[in-house]
Amino acid sequence: MLINCTNHPSKLWGEAQKKAAEAFGGAVDLPFPQIDPSDSTEKLRSLAAEYAEKIEAMDGDAVLVAGEFAFVFLLVDKLLSEGVRVVCASSKRLTTEERRPDGSIEKHSVFVFERFRDYEYFHTR
Image (cartoon, rainbow, N blue to C red):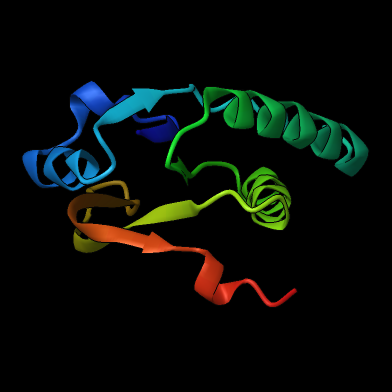
């Protein structure tokens, strides 16, 4: 089973990502926590430890982690150090930009899932 710890419920994934998750036996969602920008690093470390415990108790084959960067780093680092397989979604990003009449730029991005990529290959400890 692939544990989906992101802000994107697996029921909303495209067919390619759902099919890739089948290699893990399907996906189960663990909603990504709301991170307040004013949270201290120590609070994020504590929350990462809490989420690592939840993820380990779910006993999945791997976990997909994506969201607020500092928390993701802390959680991925903790999980990898405990031997948990962690992946990210690798996607093509198709972007268009248009200048609006008021001078602002409107950006539209479409993400096309390609595959899951293991974090372990990048972990240096």
